[in-house]
Image (cartoon, rainbow, N blue to C red; front, side, top):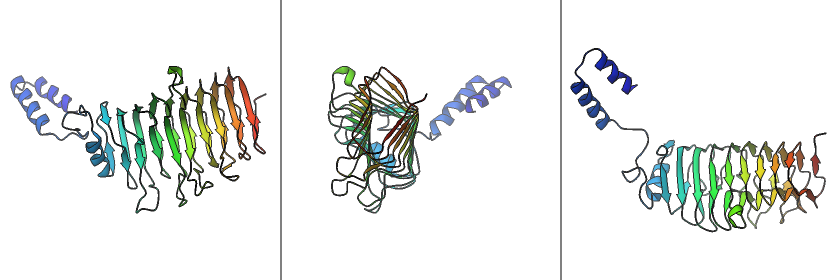
Length: 305
């Protein structure tokens, strides 16, 4: 719009010198919607504090467009209703724990109505995690996470001892790239977790649409109740989809994987001892060495005729 205005002014005969002077004046005084980090769009060794300050403002948070952000400390979502627009930037995370984490609101409930989109995260340190998701009624969309070392997890989906999550979230078109192809081990794409003090309180009733996980030891480790994974691709992994809760007989019930694509995985679908009534329907598989391992109860694998 602003560029068009300057072109029109020149077209109607206004002096080019005047037009360019006006342009420079306007752009110097204009406040852009995308924040600068450290004044130079994230070129420092650690932008953790600047980015945390930005998130703490709440509301709609615009990350700097298409930039590389280097952080050493987790970025923590602390309140409800935050919308983080990643704007296709990349976070290089060289810290421990999770690059993006959540804290309970009022020291009690998981945050709700949080949205994170269009963001890439590269995990650099052994044992670290991309996102430790502790939210409900929220969404993660068009994001990618790259693992580079041993004992890393793309997204950890955490249950809450207070029973406030992680519930009713939507994960859409998210990609997790493991590092098995580079000799790294113990990589998880998606990992559902819970507190040992309350193992039956797991992530429940979450939905996935599309996305991919590749070259991980376990593509998705699933527990909780009523989670539905639609059209997920799992490639080059040890176990593509693993259903179980080793600490609770009612902690992995009626989870569904619908029409997945499974390519060159050692085991396509694994039902652990405490999995109950879980379903895989209409998978497309190529190169899976073992289609199913099932030591659970009343689980179903429905193949297309």
